[in-house]
Length: 171
Image 1 (tube, helix red, strand yellow):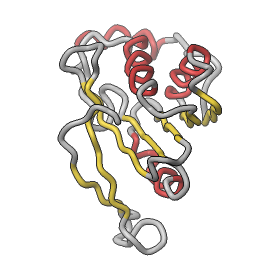
Image 2 (cartoon, rainbow, N blue to C red):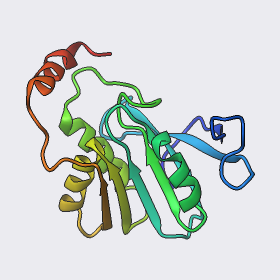
Image 3 (cartoon, rainbow, N blue to C red):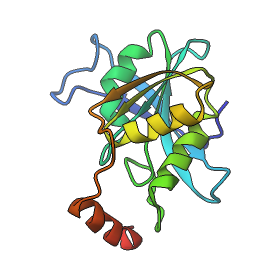
Image 4 (tube, one colour):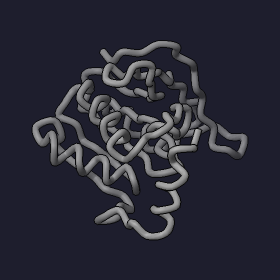
């Protein structure tokens, strides 16, 4: 099982005062994945569904969190073991000063390799870059890859240059 500590209950509603799904509240446990590569670093993740079912790993895009996939996780977890991870600096996962794109990849790679494979990976936007790189690097561990609104490359225009300039002071 994944290394974790400090679980909390998380209940889902549809944002209109009603219940999520088919008339029931969906309760999941959020957990903390503690990195073995980077001392003191951790990421929040969610796991839902039967442990003996095929595994789906969801990777969100920039400025998102695993919660972007909550509806999909709720439905898919009826038949699959589904994991959603908050990337560093997203959702409840802390930002690590000085982080770069390789650090995002290292986090996802370390987490994904602890999951029971082969994995089906679903990734959105920036998460698609990370998931594609993971699939190319570990093809025996990834059986399927679904990319949602993912660019073929990372544009390095003005926004990228400003982000690189500001990243060392982000916290």
